[in-house]
Image (cartoon, rainbow, N blue to C red; front, side):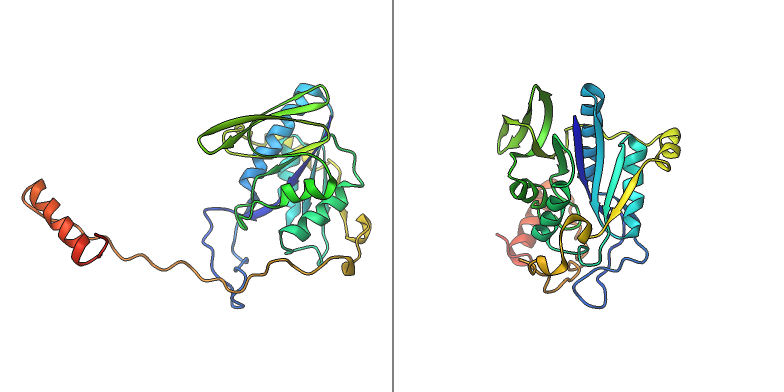
Length: 260
């Protein structure tokens, strides 16, 4: 069972994010970078499937030299090999172009199953995993909270409004992860030491058969980034009794907030 995990390095969710001077990007100098949390679920699920069925887990990512840290973390968790697409023309692309690049890299790899996070917490566009499956012409199941590999197929429980649905797809297939699928393991000290010696290959676009001119322009672009408006301080409602406080609250909602 050859499994490929699509992984992205993102700013840690606790990082203080500021808009850069260009108004369309964020300042990155002081940010802490980590594996996208939904991709951690993907790595963990790949490792569990490998432990149950044998095979190998390969991490595939697009990024700069810094993305090596995230790949090495996944290798320390137990993945076997890593592939980084490190090319200036590939970094910072929109979701569909990113998916096209990943699909091109996957066409040169051996895989039975591809696992990806349902979304990246920086872009929040939910598109890359599904688009990769479309470019490859393989089945896709999204928002998976339980997965089980059987003979030549993967059976997945996915969330829908008000419940779950069970779907099965023949391999090769791709599914994306949702919270509740598993609890990602921590990298052990021996795992960290072993990760330093595990193979990690860096490729350019030309290495995977793409020339810069082959990539179409973005389907979407960022026009402007602004921080959210600052929230005003809360107002305390004083009163001698619950009835008096309730009356003052209703009055404030009607006359000041104008919501009733």
